[in-house]
Length: 138
Image (cartoon, rainbow, N blue to C red; front, side):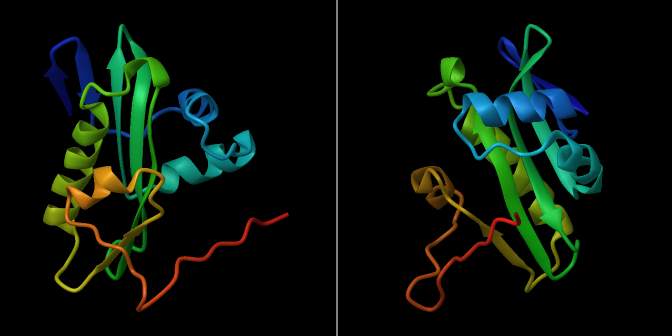
């Protein structure tokens, strides 16, 4: 399903591997191995991306088990297109998905590189009740 947003097209589908790798790289997100992206992206619960002139310039995904736990990941907007509300459009599409698919009591998490964006959508800090943690497999 697509939606026209002025000069942009919002596509409710996971972005392709090449665009995923490129967008992570140009936005400063941690690089991900191509082989892992090829395996992982099709396993997403939900994906959305925005194109400009047929090129992906923003993206976001939801991963998890589809009932108890959902995680918002890979939200990124190409530097040349930041500040135009595209991150908000990505998050609104993700929230629409979560509001229709996540059952009551589901736990929805994310790692916030830009907390201000996520606070606008009702996310809150988990501290002091809990602390976000991660490990990078090597």
